[in-house]
Amino acid sequence: MKSSLVCVFLLLCLVTPVVSAEMLDGAQELAQSGFVDESYDDLYDDLYADDEAAEIYDPLEGLNRGTFWFNDKCYFYLVKPLARGFRVVPTPVRKGLAKMFDNLNSPIRAINCLLQGQFCQFGKETTRLVVNSTLGVVGFFDAADHFWQIKKKDEDFGQTLGYYGVGEGFYVVIPLLGASNIRDGLALVPDSYADPIPWLVDSKIALALTAGKVVNRVSLDKDTYESIVAEQLDPYLFTRDAYVQNRRAKVID
Image (tube, rainbow, N blue to C red; front, side):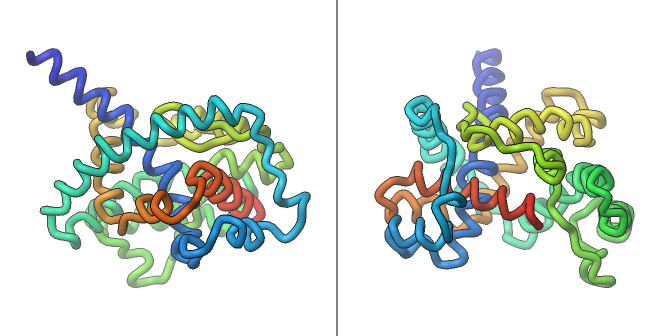
């Protein structure tokens, strides 16, 4: 019985990253800008100004759709119910936890800023890590932004490769990880070495923290993905285009 519970717990830890990457990032940004309320044709026209920009190489669409279906079921039947239950925790506390997890991503952002020659932003990310880890109570408060308006900038190794002209390759939905492409998928490996969590705790605790991070994040989301599924004719295409648009914008920025 105990071993079965451990297996279920570890499965949850592995499954939860699906939601953060695929179903919330790009889709949430588009939803907040009003795209969710439009038809897919209108959305497509708004996302891309010309045919060349609109091209998304998706040769594995059949396989990707199957993986998307699996990730979708994990979201609705596993992660979302847990996230709703976690809403018993007061919102300020959950927001503070989200900031703590985000603070742990500062080394990833800092290293990739350095690799891209963004020395000023590298200094800002390093400062944010020090300030928020101390004055911000291990990142529970964003003291760097609140007191000195030191803003973060999302950077990862996929964006670094894109900065140096590495193409994104074809689109792929990774089981248990979500939307990606060849470049960004491979970039997850070096980014994982800059993540401090695996260096500070053992693997099981690291997986548990990953699960907690995503459940907490989804608990703060206002049912963005549910709106997409309910209002879009093809949620797979919407989510794919949202992810690609979001990643291309970040590489250019």
